[in-house]
Length: 256
Image (cartoon, rainbow, N blue to C red):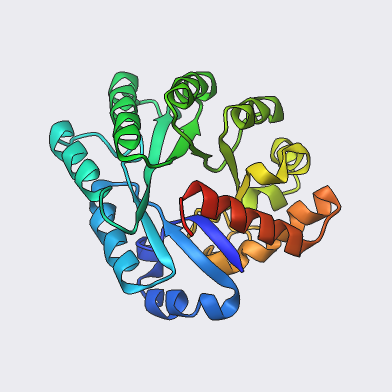
């Protein structure tokens, strides 16, 4: 079975066939899915999905580009309240994203730090989004690990050397469809050289479909392509990849 550690099935891209798709996942080899929240509205939507399907779990958290025009105290209270619910297994996706011209770095940093503290109080792992903020994100995560925190660097896009430093701190590295792209040299190096015990499979669906489905709507059903590429790079079997990443995900999310 395959564990999709990062999906967005509350996205409108799945409005036409969400139930058919999710209900059929276990029969097609997808044993567990964590539906990851991004904006304020997605927290409740994701909880509904987790309540409807035994194999679907959820996170609670706010993406760094989805925090503007919100009442910070109010929404963080909601995140902290929801993270106590049984099927909420992580805080995320949270982090830093300095890609856009209108970025409010100070506000992103405040939300990030506050949600890291929520994760520590709740004893939950974090799902980290980082774009154009590699060094600063790493500094935050180094401090978080020193306090006993753990989690995954989602959709990893930085160097192998930085990934290796994350692994030394106890973090997992999330690998999805990008690893199948011909020009994804850095991620291929990570998939090949990092300890298999530190890798998680993810889709980020409906985004980032792997080759040969690139450009189409992504889903957990495409994860065998990701597992196959990791297996090819490492010279091992697909079953070794899916088995190890299943165990890694179960460990990180505290599931039995």
